[in-house]
Image 1: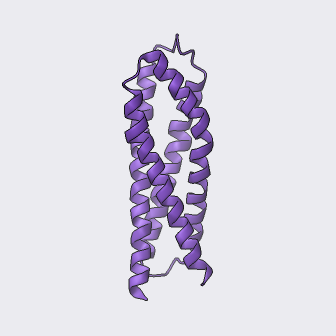
Image 2: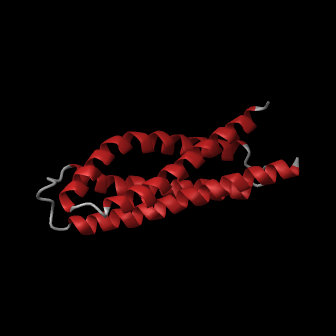
Image 3: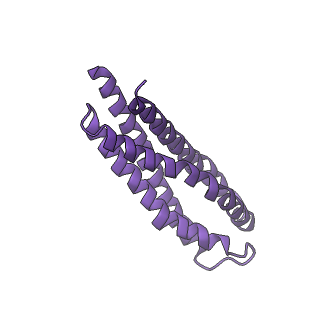
Amino acid sequence: MAPAPILDFVAVFFAGLLAGALLVIDYGVRLSLAALEDQVQIQTRQALILRLRIVVPSIFVPTVLLGGAITLLDGGAPGSGFRWAGLLIVLTSFLLTLLGTAPINKAIGGWQPGAPPGNWRALVNRWERLDQARTWAAIIAFALFLTAIALQLAAQ
């Protein structure tokens, strides 16, 4: 088997993991946190941030790198427009994380759960909006990468 199909499979695998992980964080964990009392909510957010700051990048970075590699390697293949669009959208999701949610996560890590800053709810709301945007970007990128593979297979 040629390296490109294997690389394509691994890239799409990571894109699917990313979309699924962010979907669970956004529509499972985030909505559950809102039901908790303020202090418990902040403590839980802090605990999640400690764990997810390892897990999410370990999925995000390979998605971006592998997506970029396969897009460059198979740049002119059938479906390449979908692959390029998927790469741009996954990069957008990555930037939303680096410039949006990650700085808020860092701030949350320093909060005192019993005495959070006065604007803590506004920061959490901003994080949630950014998280929804990056989640849907990751889902759309996954769908675009899958479409590229389907078009490539249909052309064979």
